[in-house]
Image 1 (cartoon, rainbow, N blue to C red):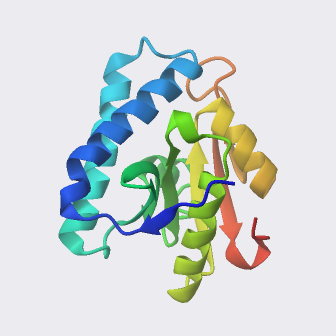
Image 2: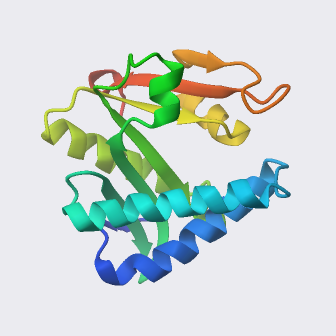
Length: 182
């Protein structure tokens, strides 16, 4: 397993993180077979940059990112913040009082090398130290859904055919005490 440095982002990381988000999201869209959805791809990239901006402006109070570095290259991200509008609407507000964990991205060249698990473990410790007992996360990406099912079991909410026939959206509610570290 490749060992990485995990730290909070700095203002000077913004340009590299923008490029990182673009690379990972573009790769994900193509792997998911939805690469032609250019507008949706740009919306997702913009949303991640807005989350980062919110983190940097608030010093981690409104959004909280961690980044993984191999040498001086950003190869992974994870963040938490308020539950998204999609989660709140789809669960009729049942998860509105807990944090959403998201932006769990690993650069395509480093996927399947343990980086995601290192980021997750660091975030579990961060949340636990803040007194957080549970979080939610969601995914509409089939490949990510496989990973989250393996880690957290079946989702608490299944939005069948949300993104089109056979393209479901899934939402998990995770209790930190139930997580076994990797």
